[in-house]
Length: 176
Image (tube, rainbow, N blue to C red; front, side, top):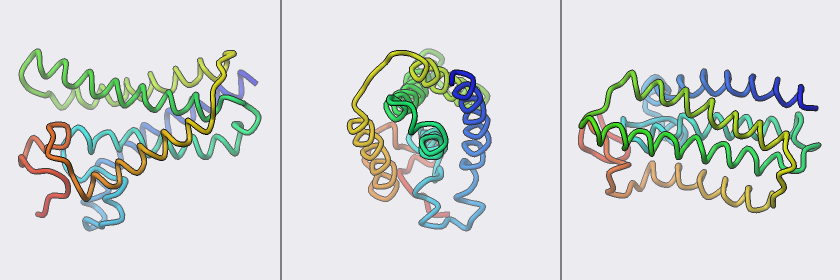
């Protein structure tokens, strides 16, 4: 089973790399669709870039559950923890390095996305292949709260720094 899990995590990582990268551009490419805005970055804020991690990782979690997860008791919890670690890494890393040097650097931001994905997928793999036990109901609740937050805050954006587009100084969907 470990070999199956390893293969699935590698496929998941590659999928998240590709789809996450594409989600950076889908909102504009698809005519600024309100539906697409729910799961694509609508501006350059840290919050909107977290969607690039969350939605592909959520999708691989759902697909993975039906492919291998039904046979693994901690599948949902392990994936939820992996997703949360990826999101947390991006936030902590971004604010730490920009706090130190005073600005963001696109190359570092892009690299941190890939590192965050690998970190989250690795943690997920380690948990899936361990004796870790958890309550899947809590994992579903946590994923649901994060999912709803991403969607709601796209349209009703709090006036907090994590939601602010550093280029326009605006929040949420920016009209061009």
